[in-house]
Image 1 (tube, one colour):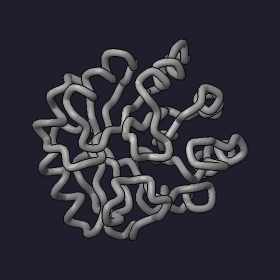
Image 2 (cartoon, one colour):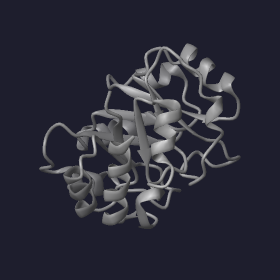
Image 3 (cartoon, rainbow, N blue to C red):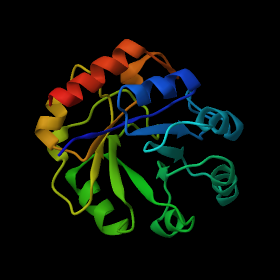
Image 4 (cartoon, rainbow, N blue to C red):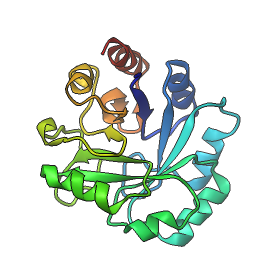
Length: 204
């Protein structure tokens, strides 16, 4: 099965268009003000306007209010919600949108527990644990902690063209999620790095 690719932390229209041109399956928009890759609702809506079909648009939230999420959904055509904070299953399910829950990996139990708790999630996104940082660390975690669960798994955390092929061969995830690994600066994507990353995914 082909490994899907999400390119996260999109802040510019040209980066979105190039990622799609290179075959990205999903684009991620960070609605978390403390992130260097944060976008406003208006910025995301403008970037998404008129993008081609068959590309998932994903909104990333960290302990956001119901009002903020509903306002975002109203103006940005999100296909999927991504929760990176301490959101409960009940909280995640209330928006009538498919969602995936991020799991910050410290032990193998983190994944099995999340799969049991977030049964309505369409996928679990596995990220690196770093105290006080909800994601975007740019660091990998110990992939041997990933055990089979009855849920699609998206691998994130420190991926780049240098390691994504080996990650796919070891874990065989449904998809991979990259942000900093395809950037020239935080929030500014690099076309050559995107091209190289997509090629490595294809090679794997």
